[in-house]
Image 1: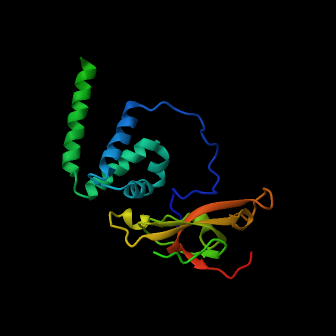
Image 2: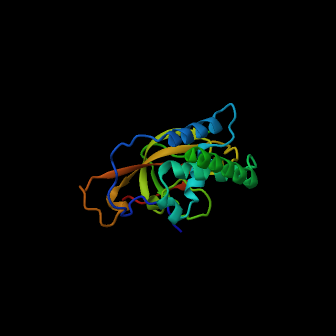
Image 3: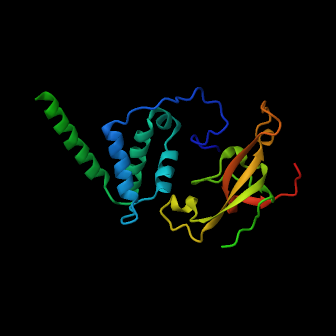
Length: 106
Length: 98
């Protein structure tokens, strides 16, 4: 079966050719990936990143932006490799969200 | 690691659709083209994608395809071609002349 990402030659509508300014979080995702793949650590490879992106189903793949796909893949690969646990990730996300709500309220 | 194919060789891309991480686009599988250039050998990205070492390195080639061979309804100029980088384990010798 053709994987969803493998869309060479398939009608996909117009291509957005404009440049866009990178959001701070997008730069951060890029930095995280560079640190993880750096030869001194090599926690993961760009090939693993790519596999993770390609494993996203059609819905997620189409709904996510470029760096959203990246961070979704990085998260999956790091869980897969035991670098982080689902529980640890969930607790950290809750803590970050709580902090964000507090900052927003003040 | 010596390369099995040389520039000018006619090759066929394996008509294979395995599960797992594949680096050969769907649209060239089962098609024939001509080796344009040998690009050296690299750790197998289909193995690296699973965190494995990807050894031994696999030769990589630039393969040129006739656009009309790829797309039956191709409406561009007759001589138009497309070049795709393909790893050796996806290629077989081809007797086909066109």
